[in-house]
Amino acid sequence: MTAPAPSDKPGLLVIGGSSLIGARLREAAAFYPGPVRCTGYTRLASGDILLDAEDPQSFAPDFAFENVIVCAPIWLVSDELLERLYSLGMTRLVAFSSTSVLTKTQSTDSYEQAVVAKLAVGEQRIMDFCTGAGIAWTILRP
Image 1 (cartoon, rainbow, N blue to C red):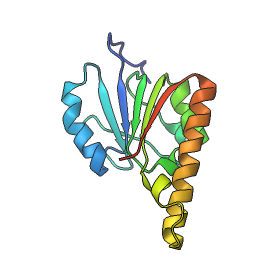
Image 2 (image 1 turned 135 degrees about the horizontal axis):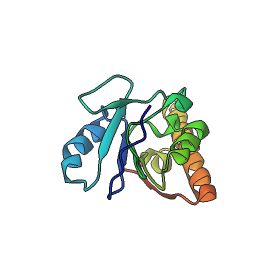
Image 3 (image 1 turned 90 degrees about the vertical axis):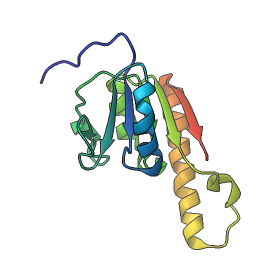
């Protein structure tokens, strides 16, 4: 394996490149000043890399990055994944969640309750890890 190519601009890793938001970020990536790679469970297009959320230690990107945007469901972001991203150089994390974590807390629908619980756990995991590791973080709730 060769070392990632150096860049004078920080790299950007987009997790969930095939999601609705990820697809739009792929288009907007042309305006990002540094190298950009998107991940998916399958190869989406040239330059995409694979990331198995259940085996984050196997993730070996071909470029250096500091910035990470998570467009995949926030509850898939495990402590192991966060540790791996941190070990690879992550200094900033942006993750998408949902306003449902605030607006549907009193829902009587069991499915909505389950989604709210998963969102809340995912958000808290990111906040705790990033705060403890000194990683700048943002959770967006569109």
